[in-house]
Image 1 (cartoon, rainbow, N blue to C red):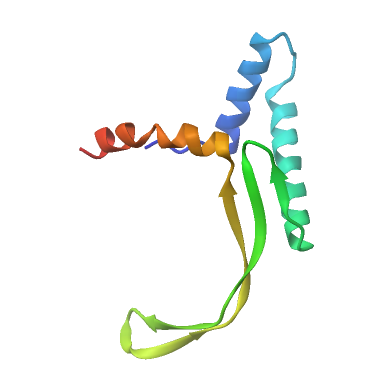
Image 2 (spheres, rainbow, N blue to C red):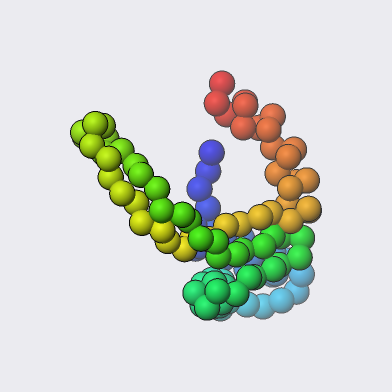
Length: 110
């Protein structure tokens, strides 16, 4: 499976917008992507929930304290403290699109 970087994403968006008659540089699009990431991160850091219709919802959740295992010494317990984590819940449109990719994933793994 391919990995898409921010740069590759900005190139794709620049090309797509170019076909629609919008003249933006890759640098402009990359700045917009970075601003979006920064704003989502800042909102989550303040405990807010970020909802993007048809894409999904980002929210901060408490991860409870638990006992883990040290892989080098499985007999030894390692306490893992409680912390805040981000949960992403995909939107309906994303779920439906991603659900159709199972065949592609199986073909790549064969």
